[in-house]
Length: 120
Image: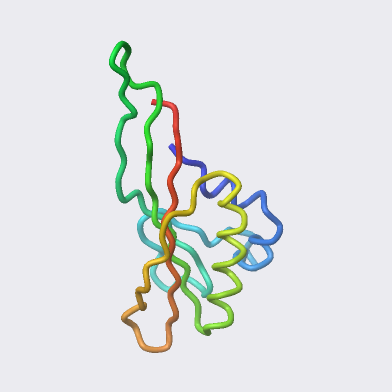
């Protein structure tokens, strides 16, 4: 699968923002742990398809993931969003920046999607 945590954990610009005192990177797949410290990021697989060829089975898949960044302030959200995006743009194609709020008062959310090619 896509090594989001590994890629982000290897990026000092991200770890300085998303590692807690316990040294654990606050990047989660699908859902964050309850009561997690802000800011944090969540990634979710939202779609994918095999890249088929006429004469051979698919060698690669195109996977689209969504990254959500959550923070207590707009400034923190924007800082983490930019740091995560700037790391992942070297590994994927950034596609979309949907304008979606968090739905929770006092929590700020930033979202983007990106496409990855992975071996089938």
